[in-house]
Length: 246
Image (cartoon, rainbow, N blue to C red; front, side, top):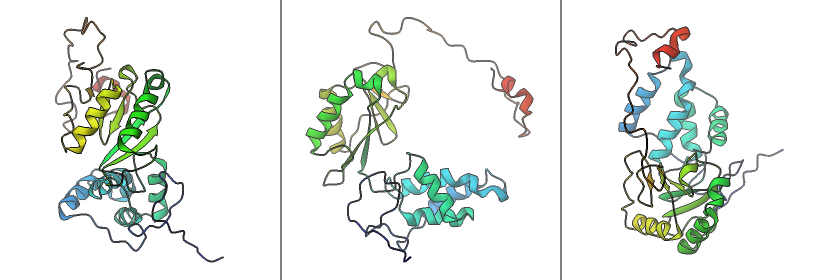
């Protein structure tokens, strides 16, 4: 049977199979930048020489960030070459983990949580607001390539529902008003900076405290650990709990 490759100019997201597009074929060129090759070598240095394939996930992530948030086949092939693995081994990793985008996404990739806690707190209203404001539907990308919207499963910020993940960052406690404000800030290239705890509730909270603010745990004493515990680079698995202060 001949090898027939399907060609499309606008493939839908998250397909289980690859579909060639003009900018995504096995013949498309990809290579890491000189600066990123320093990171490639740093990543590979973490693993024994005969276990280079352990670096597939971090190398794919590096390639995706270099390529504007998505992974062409050529980037996967480059990673396969570096770790000395069959390309299929890299394809199966890239297609399994949802952190990897195998089709082009917008500059701002909006992952909207639609799981139960977010749903009952208004994620459907947030989705409708995004769709109306940007003129796209779930799975779509704006014509200017600025935004992609995708509804996903739980992102683990249930206490501050409804929320979205915008590229690497979490924006939480959203309302139709604040999601529009966030989108407009992104259009200006000025998304709000992350809060103290690495996410940003859009209702003025610092983290996930209740309406009365912080009422307990005013001081959190760090566990006492031996700063020299890993100086020789070896850890006895039988004592790992003690090393981690469990």
